[in-house]
Length: 268
Image (cartoon, rainbow, N blue to C red; front, side):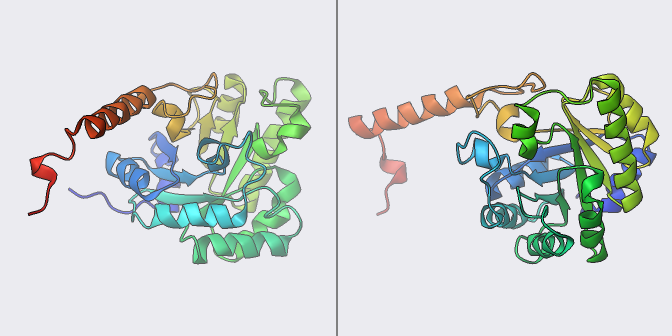
C-alpha cells in the first residue's frame, strides 16, 4: 500500500504514539527519491551541503540561493517525506522581517514544507514572525554549527549546570512559541532524555543519545561517501566511496581497452 504524504501534524503525532521519527539530509533529486522510497519520515535540506557537497570547512558560507536550489530539487522528487529547508547563516538573524521573507522564499521558490533555524530564546520573535506566515518551524539547539566560532569548534554543549538549564529554558520557550520539533545536536544523553520528557513536541537527536523522539544523520556520512572526517555520533551503514571508486576504475579500463561501449550499447 502506497505511503501517504507526511505532514507536520503527523510528526507531532508520532511522539504522542511513542513512535520513533527518522530524518536524513538530502541535497538532490536522486537521493531524495531513494530516501523517500526507503521510508524516511523527514528530509532535511541541510546547510551541511556546504561541507559535504561544496567542500567548505563549515556551513557559514552557504547562501540563500544555494539552499533554495538544493531544496527545490529535493522537492522535485515529490517525496512522501516531509521536506524541511535549513535557513543559512545570516538569513534570519537580523530581523523578524528578514526571517519571514527568507522563510517565505524557502516555501515559494524552494517548495519546502517547513524550515529549520538554529538558536534559542533570542530568536523567538523571528520564529513567531515565520509562524504568522503559516510556515512550520523546526528548532535546533545544542551544537549549532552556525555558531562554531563562538563555541571554539565543534564541541558538546550543555555539560555544566548553567548550560544545561539554558538549553532546557530555550527548548521550552521555543515550544511555547510554536515550533513543531527541535533538533538536539551534541547534547549529553541524560540531558537530551530530560528535555525529551519535558517537551510535548518531538526532539530529533544527532549525537544526543537514544532517548530522543527521533534521530537524524547526514546521509553522506551514513553511506560512507564523505571521508574528510567522521563525527563520533555517526554510524556508517555502508562504505560506498571505495565501491564507487572501483566502479569508475573499471569504466576507465573498459573505455581504454575498447570493452565499452559493447554491441548492446550501440544504436544501429
